[in-house]
Image 1 (cartoon, rainbow, N blue to C red):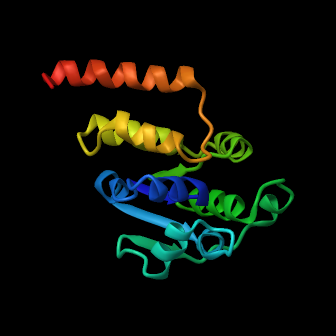
Image 2 (image 1 turned 60 degrees about the vertical axis):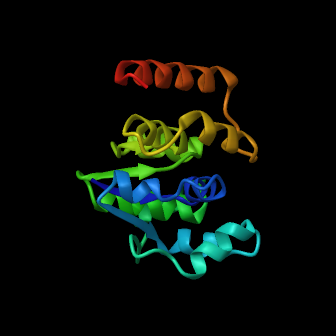
Length: 166
């Protein structure tokens, strides 16, 4: 499965030390040029800016021309380009995006989506990370998540772990 990533999920996965789960979950990880620019921006967290100076081989930067139909969206450039790139790669693509407006637009365009929490949950289900530890690190950033959602994710993870005998 191909994933097209927006900026914020990459930021958070990098900040919590879990970005390497992406190539473990997906066969091809792409970002549009605008996301690359946002990762390199002055306001990017230091670990993110350092990481993108020498991006891993599994990260592919794709040129993206945003169609006219995307220009009226009230989204950031990275979100617009990520949505356009994902739409161009349908049907074998998932858009990695956290921002609410962008998720709604992608859903309206029938683009499958996943967010940072979905990636962490999927990676935990496949035994690629400790979900509790990853969520604790995520909560130390400025990522907002309702405590009730954290509780549901941890409960589901506990059931999975009990089923596997861990």
